[in-house]
Amino acid sequence: MHPFKIVRPTTNQQAIAMMDGGTSKFIGGGTNLVDLMKMNIEKPEQLVDINALELKKIETRANGNMLIGALVKNTALAYHPTISDAYPLLSEAILAGASAQLRNMASTAGNIMQRTRCPYFYDTVTPCNKRTPGSGCAAIKGYNRMHAVLGTSPGCVATHPSDMCVALAALDAIIHVQGAGGLRLVPFADFHLLPADTPHKEHSLGPGELITHIELPALPFAKYSAYLKIRDRSSYEFALVSAAVALNINNGIIKDARISLGGVGTKPWRASTAERLLRGKKAASDSYQAAAEEAMKDAKPLKDNGFKIELAKRTIVAALEKIKPA
Picture 1 (tube, rainbow, N blue to C red):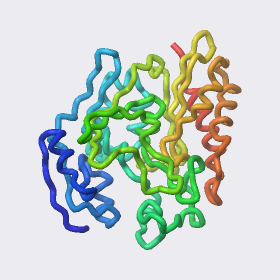
Picture 2 (picture 1 turned 180 degrees about the vertical axis):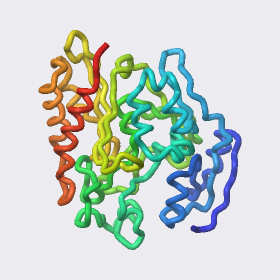
Picture 3 (picture 1 turned 45 degrees about the vertical axis):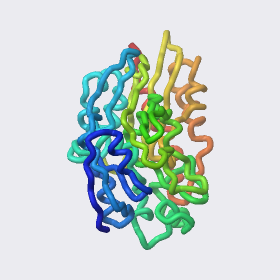
């Protein structure tokens, strides 16, 4: 691990001012960043410890939206009574990820900012455009069973690892960001970037910008939702495929729908065209199957991960069938 210094601001403004010249990193729970530092993938000269900031509350706003502080621990968020009741897919997604010990440490903003678990990214002797721009992508011709089939490019096929982010994508979450220029709101769909020819650019944060909150819109039918994760083992494993779904059903007809996917995309993958296909259709297996086909129509398999396409379709259908309207 490279030498670094650590500073501990007590206000958001101090924290932002301490992010100097791109050589500093914010640290909250540290469950991903510290591992990357140990492996000499991340080499910050300074860590800005933000744990003293007032960003640890979960509140209901006047408009009914939920406001989640960036430093809220994953465990606290998953078990919060309003979250588990009104947004069950978010609770289920968080509890499907990592281990209890990691969830007790990991922060909400840190989960959003975590980096891929692609083994070639972690192996510093192999080419990786995320780690060393322009060096190539070893996964494309290597062993790529766990890699993405949606949103890939010739420069990168790594999947986004988060379970929580799949749920946030389905819920139309809004990320509150503060920087030297003030506050701005970023729709969740616009936060994570597709790799294209710049895989090392993974998010839309500007230099020194700090995530302060995540806002969940008051989505009444989010109560009728589910998260389904398919993995190689039932404990502490990343998704082969996951689906976060919600349905607004009235008299057997789907009025609105939300579908997002994990384990198959280079970012948390919102299946918007599949959602549109469901609107106005009967809440039945044939409608769900048609939506699943639509969601995966642009998938591009690699030599080891073609099975993910059919698995994703089945996961979408199974997740939708778990939802029972009031």
